[in-house]
Amino acid sequence: MTLWFIFGLMTAAAIFAVLLPLGFGDRLRSGGREAVVYRDQLQEIDRDVAGGLIAKPEAEAARIEIGRRLLAVADEDAVAAPRANVPWRRAAAALALVGLPLLAIGIYLPLGSPRLGDFPLAQRSRTPETAQPLEALVAQVEQHLQENPTDGRGWNVLAPVLLRLGRFDDAVRAFRNCITYNRDSPERRADLGEAIAAAAGGVVTTEAKIEFERAQALNADDVKSRYFLGLAAEQDGREADAAAIWRTMLAKAPADAPWRSLVEAALTRVGGAPGPALSDATVAAANGTAENDREAMIRGMVDRLATRLKQNGDDVEGWLRLVRAYMVMGDREKARSARADARDAVANDAERLRELDDGLKKLGLDG
Image (cartoon, rainbow, N blue to C red):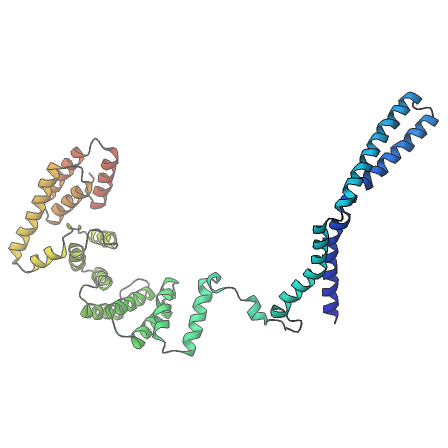
């Protein structure tokens, strides 16, 4: 009952706030305050005359001016008085008296309830899903998987996130469950091997290597497993094997492969140098020939690249591929000659020259 009484008082206050300016606004704005001020001024003039503070002619002039202003205020009141009773004001007053309560009741009845209990504290403090931090979302997924451990899709979502958060042991378990509750795939095997290596501090252990080899068995072109198998060879001291793995990857990779720079850096680290990028069709053709024929094919491609660059020397990337190719072939003298020709070709373009020098430094041929 108390709640409804409070609602009634609030409604009455709202109605009063609407009716007050409609009924008294003009009078408050005009004659009320100004007329009182002018009457006080007339009384003040009479006191000044009685006290000898102002001469009678000046007092009379002041009375005339104040009387004129008082009459003007009276005229404004006379004009405003009929306005107070115009029809739209009466309609507005009636709407405020009847419409506001009906509107409030019409909204409250379907939406509100004075007997509605409080929401539980956990529900009130819960933030929207999109605003929760990643750790909170991971905790929710983990809770779901504890209750539904065979949910393969859930493990697929959770495993890479755990790896990114650095929870490597948990990521290993999650990737194993991905394989258990989903079909086996080279990607999942490679991800599992990566998680095992990360848990070992970046060392490609025997267990991780087994997973990468399983990925290779499922797909010989799987990039991640091939890279880590090269890393395993490097860590075992077999740098030549590592260089061979990574060089083959680069030879078959498209020029815009996002992982190309990573493999090139790894190849440089073991003392090798990236070879020129070849198309898949070219590599397939080269694999079907004898060793001498394959070498002749590569040399022919390099020669054609050199010829093209002599005709159009603005291609900085082409010059870098040519220098890299000569280094892979073991012909450092031709690599130095190509470096000199490249610098001569772009000598008048400071931006291209800077790009060329940066690329030569990465190849280890900036001297």
